[in-house]
Length: 263
Length: 377
Image (tube, each protein chain N blue to C red):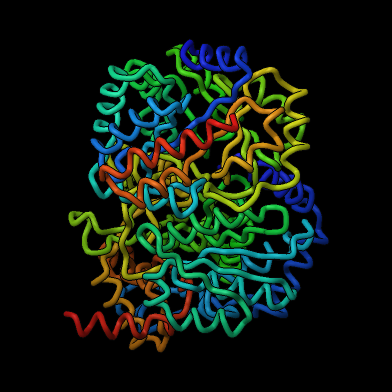
């Protein structure tokens, strides 16, 4: 397992805390704004940052992240700019960085992508449209580059398969809370608690829940069974609300503090 | 494919492989094709067109199938599958609206709830089909994200499916999507090629020299081609949309201009940029306006079994008018691409050649588009 991610979860478990993983789309509202946003998130206490590489057809994402992705692409954010930003961030912060992108980007770039991301200072990779059967080779190649290939478990994943996914996942296991796409919801499905209890028996690896989470109360009932919470759309909404203005950064800090208080 | 869908796609594969070898399922499909969809569709010897081209031209009249295109072949078959899987809600994507109408029809036939996703650009340019779907009791959801065409309609249908996967069957209309969809669509569309095979034997006592069909996602073409796969003397020509011209970048010619990639669960040839971002496609024919293509066509191309060419918007509109006036058949703009290719190949044909062109759909839906196109020029 990658050191930064591994150390982070070790430290959190030791102190009885849970990880706050924050997703942002790189280039929304602009690349230099993303740089300031990530630094703010990190200094405010976000434990892990998930950097979304914008993609033209983000099928796993709801309207908020979709719009942010299109906006970034419209602003001309490409792979080279993305990589350059990661390098700049890595020189300034030590927070674990995880990249989220779609399969065609990886397919197109090939295993070079792992090497390039890893040298830029990325610790893990999430590819939401690439299921276990098709990512085996990639997972091994990523590991060789010191990059954790993070696998996803969903409510429709059968138990035996979930065990397999947990075994193969590196860094942490991404537990999708609901059947659906990303985006804040009023509440999480009732089946989540049972699913987490089962998963907890399958694996000792860190379990992080994502999709639909925006408020502290979403987390309380399942906190016992998880190691972290992933939040994306709720943060993007804050970013969209203030844009790249002076008000944005304190607003992000306040949100991080509010979430951290229950984790 | 997202993990959430893996179990459902696998269940579809299991169910289909259970049904495929059995006669009872296919008897049921055949019965609906015959008594409901009006199959077999004619293979018509187009005499005036033949005289013009200098070979014997036969038109496979999929425009005469119920709902006005070949799409009904697949929707009837898949809706029977959906019923076997116990699904009560049907979703589909549509470009030109032909698949949407065919899905809405099949859903009405079996009393199932139906939602069709359609890019908002296509909602405007194929408004007749939108009204038809509504009349059939289907909810049409306009998709305003991305390029607002077929690709984005599929994205949105996939997002719906991920959300409602337990209750919902995704009825894909093109020979694309995760396995086993391309295979299922091909099998249900193979009725086109199988009919042609026996009809041409009856009419000419031999197999044709050429098969011509348009290729967007590639469902009518793979349906026509695949039964002839082993008949090596039968040459196959798939016709993609060159849109405003290949050099303009505004086209949908994924087979000739695309690179290997993965889109909508299909590994195939895709129009994309240097970073693997999917490039916007263009065609005057909404049903061809897709940056990917069925994986079996990519295979036919790589193995050399079929040849793939492209036809511009201008050429397609000319062919649309030509077939209307020469034979009294108003073809869909999609099918017009195949007709245009026929005219283009005039010099390549030998006098004794027999050519089958698939008229995959009727052109009523395109009247307005063609009228406006005329006005623009």
